[in-house]
Image 1 (spheres, rainbow, N blue to C red):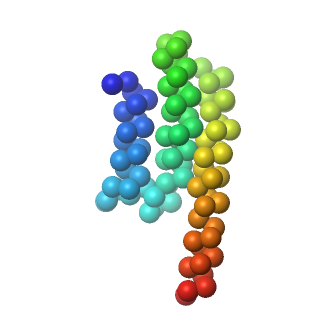
Image 2 (image 1 turned 135 degrees about the vertical axis):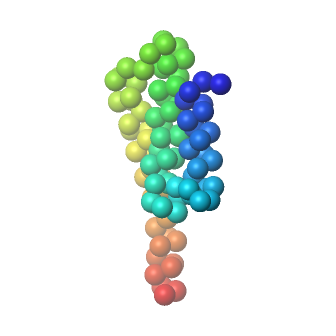
Length: 86
């Protein structure tokens, strides 16, 4: 198995597995942004060319930010609902 795939599996597992549980400690969005933004693009560039250059990493930034923003905006209704229940 290739290193980007192993890193993605590790991030996916550590996202919700206690005691690490990245999602509960404020690192969930960053882990998902890496797993669904940076790793797929950098991994595809690495598989096709054998190297990961800065162009591939720069291309992955916009997708990573979009994924993290999607998670954050999805949490807003939950946060607002919890605020009314306290």
